[in-house]
Length: 241
Length: 263
Image (cartoon, rainbow over all chains, first blue to last red):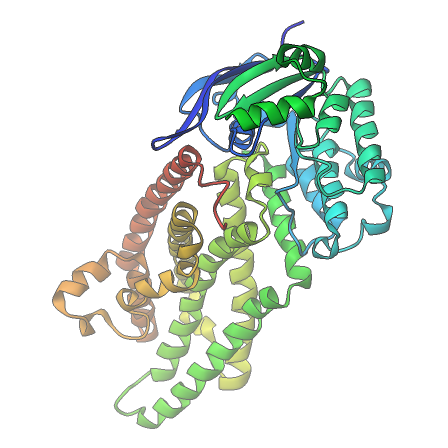
């Protein structure tokens, strides 16, 4: 099966500092790829390049077999993202924000689609609430709702459960697995919760100082580094650096 | 360009206007206050009507037209700042939205803003000072259109600078337009300026509009030459500034500034 995302030799330099250094990986259809690494490893910059927000210094990004730079509009209409570090306009209600997103991506039957997503993410109680009044957990659910609302083929998730309580976090993980199963969605996933990464990821890429230092399934990686689990591998690599 | 994406951005701002007091004040309160203050100055100056013929028509007409330019600029710049303040730029530019669609939406919003503010000012001028701006006649239409475009040009320039230099440049959203005011000859004729500054002022499309307005109010006919210059300069600057915006946008993506603006 052809990969849905192909990243080759991706490099980003800011002056003398190299944030991402020759990173290459693929994401296959329906796969969840975990992107792991300590702070400053280059995960966020990689995300931003994949979303077309930062221009790479070198290398290429292809999605659906097309180059991101040349086919930006076509590709980004099939991609969405969620991050703990973004927000949405505070003076709009949660539902108004979803409506604007739906319109931006050219969805039809917007009301029905919003109803579906609101129900899936259990947002009924705050769908008419102003975004500025949402708790951080509700805000995370709203940005996730924004991400799945547009029925993307690829989802980039940057610590999607970081501010959620264990119950909601569990439901969100179940929902993501369900969406992935039913819609064949591919996901690039980052989290500092190693158990979550083990549970969610089919494969892991470990970044350190902008470079890929390990790549494979959880089992392959733990065996290669002679550790019991991903957390021990993370600690070993992070402390060695 | 996709209309639905432009519509999405316009709707996002209309949702905001619905419940934002500061945004409503921009439309109703500040323009009204401007008019009241300048109205009283004009009433005072009317005492010297003999020395200053046509003072009321010049001042209030100029004030209303200056506000067209000012609000057109604000319509663009404040819309961009709203996205920075709500940390929404990533959501917008990681979507299929094109920079040109973003500009088209903010330009449409600025026209909406100008229309609302003009209604407030025209009505207030009429009720409080018995001043009818429509005495300018049909020339009013090309005057207003040109001032809106000049406002867009200054707005896009300001937005590019904020995008490139971040939060520290935010103050330009309110200050930049006043840099152009002295050389727009809003409240005085161009021959008041020193010779060297007159040359600079003639390169400003707004100067041609205000000179033309004074000509019409002094009993002249449609100032074709002034309008021709205003249209020509506006087109030249508009094309240039849109190019500058796209160039700045790409530089910001290269330097990673687009995701950091406002931090």
